[in-house]
Amino acid sequence: MSIFGSSSFGLPRMKPLSSKRAHVVSVLDIGSTKVVCMIGRLTPRKESDVLPGRTHHVEIIGIGHQRSRGMKSGVIADIDAVESVVRLAVDAAERMAGLTVDSLIVNVSAGRIKSDVYTATIDLGGQEVENADLRRVLAAANQQSQRRERVLLHSLATGYSLDGERGIRDPLGMFGDTLGVDMHVVTAERPALKNLELCINRAHLTVEGLVATPYASGLAALVDDEVELGCAAIDMGGGTTTISVFAEGKLIHTDAIGIGGHHVTTDLARGLSTRIEDAERLKVVHGSAFANGADERDVIAIPPIGEDDRDLPTQVPRSLLTRIIQARIEETLEMIRDRIHASGFSPVVGKRVVLTGGASQLTGLPEVARRMLARNVRIGRPMGVSGLPVAAKGPAFSTAVGLMIYPQVADQEIAASQGGFFSAGAGNSRMMRVGQWLKESF
Image (cartoon, rainbow, N blue to C red):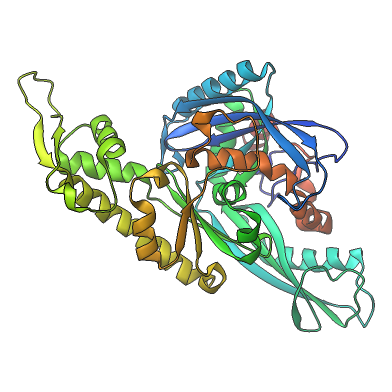
């Protein structure tokens, strides 16, 4: 039976990593701009103050990336085109690593990713909190969260309460009359995930796990103090911008808007009457989100759209480019600011925001973001792995690196699944092959 079958609400969780042996992990970041496949070797590491909670050292042994086709704002628009690009990216990574991939951890940007918090309480009768009690309270939260039309991506217990006293991280062994839990649940629409799974399976691969893009990029781009004290990670991709909020070591909120760097490129193409390819080059070479005094004096040649060799490039001041870019960037940052405020987590975020993703590399963006968001802003590059080629060390590869880090923190969710958080029909530890889903559905 498919993981997305009607009787299964959530996804089966990956097996926890063994602390005594090495693992090979393959991940796939399907974005609107590029598709990245990484293969990494995870070897056990000693507990340390640097990256606490990370159980394994991650070394990238294979990487392949291709320009994306068939994707629009994080959604599959042409399944044949996406399948073709996935095959090319995986093949390149396999050749570099010298091994064959059959299952992958894949990111999710589509399906209107949504965060909800559910609270449940159970009666303890003054007894000591045991594992069975934790399972019962998690299962009670699960009963509130199930939605047939949505698939659960992540479930994290963000805090417990005992007799009304909140903020307890681990109540095991404590005494009380009532035990409560706040459960953060991240879900996405079922059809979008079915299409994603189908695309992967058509490339003769299986999906081992699905991870929300904002969670993955936050895992890669935030340092431990930011995750603990409270911080927002803003992943600015080509077709979507995602938001993740972390506090007390856990993901507590996610959101996504369907605007990214490609929208800036399209604005330039329209405003300057030039081709998309030329607009992208102008954005990268000459573009800035922050105006300066030299923009009026600097003149830029804009290639014409037509094929006629007699058409001469148009000369425009660079300030025109800046105005077009700045308008779209300010609109995007306003939406991010409003989403963070509406979530109720603005006080948790405090003064800390990290920008990552390919579109975050735009010149002048941090300065505009500091003004618009009224917070300290830095550009986040992927951390916590070794063996990355120089070209893959920038913010554009944060999601892929985060997917590689994810297996080390996945056990935070396994505890919930043992408490009955996932239905018995969800299958075993690996997600079911598409052949079974086709048999069930057709």
